[in-house]
Image 1 (spheres, rainbow, N blue to C red):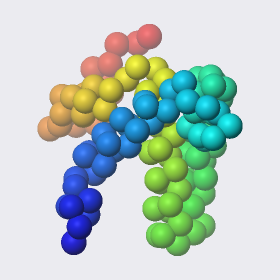
Image 2 (tube, one colour):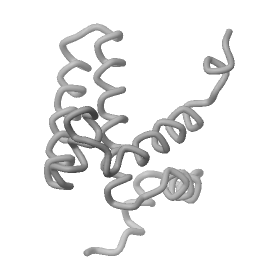
Image 3 (cartoon, helix red, strand yellow):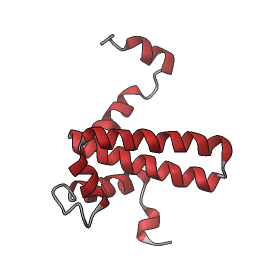
Length: 114
């Protein structure tokens, strides 16, 4: 098992997030991530939605391997969206930690209407 294999999911996501942030301002002709940033948040959000739909479809129509692949695409595009919006992974981890031990039904009731 390599050191990379021993890393937690959060560590892998944080490393990828750092790499993604480093692509801001890079050449869109040579970097897919830079191309997404260059296209703007709406394009990034649309790509995120597209990947989410593909993941849902894979969950009912495809193999577990295909679902894992589509899930990786969703996570990648979510990280790009976070980076574009200035959301750090630690912000999300903190929100999840805050919700730990709370019923999903209770958590939804506690939200203030926007």
